[in-house]
Image 1 (cartoon, rainbow, N blue to C red):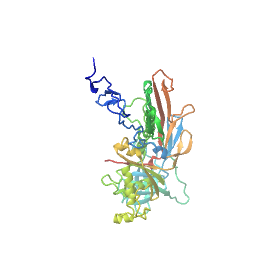
Image 2 (image 1 turned 30 degrees about the vertical axis):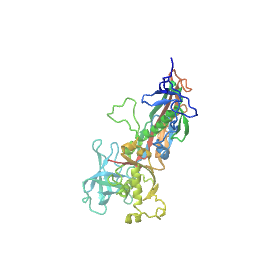
Image 3 (image 1 turned 45 degrees about the horizontal axis):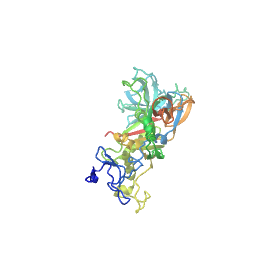
Image 4 (image 1 turned 135 degrees about the vertical axis):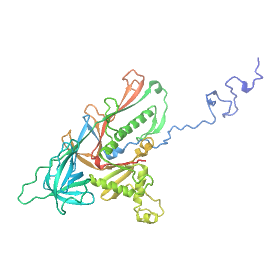
Length: 481
């Protein structure tokens, strides 16, 4: 039997036809079978594809953490609850006061407390337009049912005959001093300082990464540049690195977003929640909706901001504040400041000298800090509000104003006054266990021999809560659109 009629295409596979020169042709190398897509996988190819080992960072730095590290601190605690007390206002004032006669007003009294306006005190009574000064001649004990207690205050006016020119409701009253006759006794009663108590409980956060033992036998290296600043080649621990970065972001996001368990919920027993930053500001701070107006960004921004300043004046009036803003709101602030330039307002042109810009250089209309009234503000973009995988996807928070510096509060555990940042994290820790950020390996792969499970599991745990002290000095900028 001969092979004279067999062409190279009919030769036994693999069909190899030697070539006189050292060059790759379609018939002088080994070939494998076609894959499911019909593409031929060859042992050697004349034009091999270029393989990029390095990952393409198409989303840039994906972490959104760092906010709490910039504005606060982290401190250990040994209890499962943190309790602190905050001072109330120093001076005496009442709102929602009613006029029950031309020489009598009725002030609301909180349940379990008494009216602290005393006889012989001098007070100012106002409806917001007209103000009448008066001397208190008598104060009756609080009467009424729980939740609607009131106290009758009898007064004699200084400059006018009586209170007849004031409306019957919606009055405001504050004490500005006292006046006594010669040779009379002193002030009756005393005003005892009061405080408001707040508390928060830590929550436990957990996560893990696992890989089966069989998967670790096939090593595949990937060159990466991680968000924590490291770079180089990673084996299967590439996933472990991302799990850790994600968990670190969760530790911060939980402190920002967390809510306490409310009434009527069906959460499992033992899940109590904790009060995060947004919840604390909405409950005890200041909320401002639609800064600069959603319809026309930049228009009216200064008026909106001055309204916020007036509210800060009524609170702690902390001089230095940080603004953490979404991109749109940060641009609104830039436009607001730029519009205050006289040349810009009158001609629409930029004033080079005012902004330290020259005609031939690029104009810089970004502002990192400014002063308005008696307040200094330092602003920055908050990536958490811009990231499309987090709050940037919802877009209902425009920014937050955080007071800088520290506050003095009474710590129930220490039994003394302490100074703490307005915003700080407390985590559980003791001599035996530090739960700020724990990580450990279990399984029977990768050097761990803690069980007979054929896997390596990297575990993460943290137990923490956020303390927002002096929340009345914080402002949450929200969008209602």
